[in-house]
Image (tube, rainbow, N blue to C red):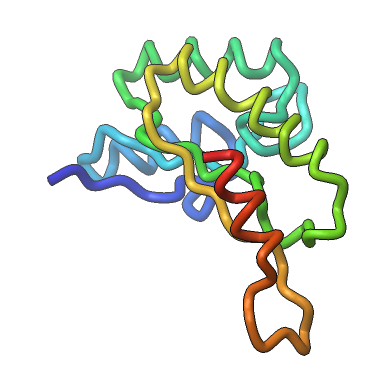
Length: 132
């Protein structure tokens, strides 16, 4: 069994996230948002390349790994009316970073439903199916 946590709930910076993970005796993070000194906090798949390089170096130095990306792919900031290109661009940014870290899993969502929606629209299944 592998234990991991969404590390940004324990700390904002990558240094803090690594420290919290190590304090728990864990070796894995589910990475969602991360902040690196000199850069704004953002999703791990959207931070600037220079910030991501620092994240990679700090992880390698600490022997803590990223087990899964907690991505913004198909998340509730978007609906099925959001241009699908937005979601596809997130996928395209995520994959190379996952490969670089040796991460095999990504958590996605299924778009924000309309407040009065009684059922999930077919477009949601189509879009989620296309990104998986």
